[in-house]
Amino acid sequence: AINAEVIEKVDKLEEDLAEMQNSAEENRAKQNRSDILRFGDELRLGIKHSKESFDNVLGTISDYDKYCTDHPTFKNKIAEINERYIAEVYEECLRNNTFL
Image (tube, rainbow, N blue to C red; front, side):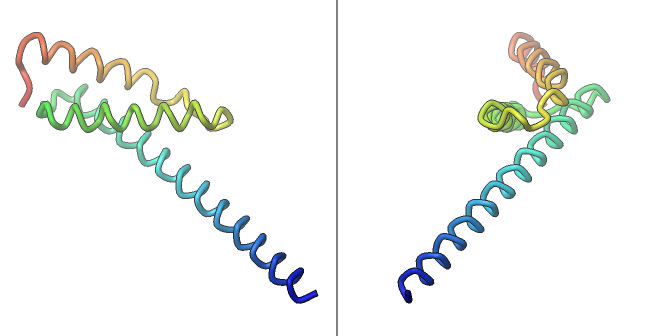
C-alpha cells in the first residue's frame, strides 16, 4: 500500500514535469516566432544587420520550424512569409556583401 502511494505520487510528478516541459517548449517556440517576425519587420524598415545576426535568426528559424514539424497542432503558418523574406535578403547580402 505504501509503495502504491509513492508510485502514484511519482507518476503525478512525472506528468507535471512533462506538462511543464511542453509548456516551456511552446513558450520558446512563440518567442522564436516573435523574434522572426521582428527581424523581418526590421529588414522591411531598412535596418541593416550583421552576418552574425542573420546566422542567429536563421538558427532561430530552424528551431522554430522543427518545433512546428514536431507539433502539428501548433499554429505555424504565421512566420512563413517572413522566413522566406529573411532568407532572400540574406542571400542578397551574401551576393553583394552588404551586411552591416
